Length: 403
Image 1 (cartoon, rainbow, N blue to C red):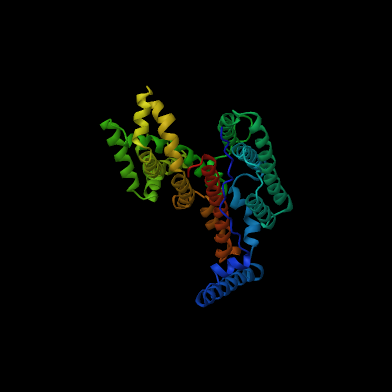
Image 2 (cartoon, rainbow, N blue to C red; image 1 turned 120 degrees about the horizontal axis):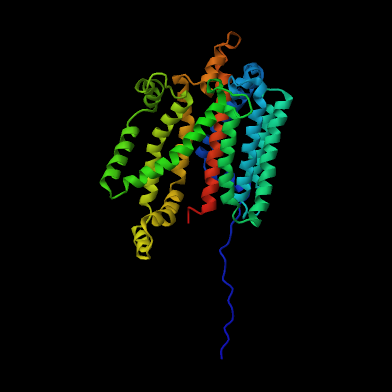
C-alpha cells in the first residue's frame, strides 16, 4: 500500500513596502508627479495654517459659548435640563450595548479606528466652549458608550437572544424618552413649541426614519405585487411624492392640512412636519429597497415555493433578508439625506438647529458671526452623519454583504 506524503502548498509571497517606498511609488514616481505633490501639499498647508490662524486669533467663539444651550435644546426650560441629560444617558447606554452585541464575535471592540474616533469625540467635548460641568458630562456620556459596549460584548457571548431583547429595549427607551421630553404623568409638561436646536433636529430625523422604513418596504413590495390595485397605488404614491419638492410637502403639512380639518382641530406642528418628512422619504426609500429586491435571483423564490413556503414566509425568510443587505448603502444614504433635510423645517417656522442659528445671529451683539455659527453647525452635522455612515459599514461587515 502506497503512502502519499503531504505536500505543503506554497503560499503567495506578501510583499511589504516601507513608507519611503510607498511615497516614491505613489507621490514622487515622476518629476511631474513630484511637482504636483509639492504644489498640493503647499496649498493644503497654507489653507490649514490660515484656518487655524483665523480660528485662534480672529474668530469670536463667544457666540457659541453664550448660546450653547440654545443650539442644543432651544427654549427648553432650564430647570428641566436634567431630563435632557437623562435622555442622552439612556441613548448612550443603549448605543453602547448595541455596539457590544453587534461586535460580540470580534476579537476586540476597541480597534485603532474606534479609539481614534473616541479620542476625537472626547477632544471635541473638551474643546467646545462651555462650562466645565457640561464638558465633564459629555465625557461621561462617552464613558457610558465605552462601558456599556464592553458589557454588551460580554453578555452577547453568554446570552444568544440578547439582540432580540435589545430591540424591544430600544422601543421602551423611545417611549421613555418621549415621556421625558413631553412631560406629564408626574413631571412638568413641556410644549413642543419650546423644543428646538439639535434636540429637535435629531428627534424629527429619528422618528421620520423609523416611520419611513417600514412604509418604504411595504411600498417596494407593493410595486412588485401581482395585484393590480396594490401595484397601481404603490406606483402612483412613489411617483407623485418623488416628483414633489420636499419644501412644498412641508408647506402643505403646516399650512394647508389644518384648512381641511374641523374648526378648532389643529395637529401639533412637530407631528405635521414628521408626517411630511415620512411621506417624502418613504417614496425614495421604496425605490432603494426595490433595487435590492431585484437583486434576489428568481430561482430562490421558486425553490422556496416548491418547498411549500407561502408568500409571507418567502418574503420574510428568503427575499427581504437578502434584499435589505444589498440595499444597506443606499438606505443609509437616504437616512443621511433625511437628517440633512430637517434644515428645511426652519422655513416653515420650526426652530431646529438651523432655525435656532438664525435667531442667534439676529442678536445685536452677535451680528456678523456667520462663519463661527455655521462652522459649528457643520461640525455637528458631520459628526452625526459620519457616525451613521460608520455604523452602516460595520453592519455591512457584520452581515458579509460583499460575499
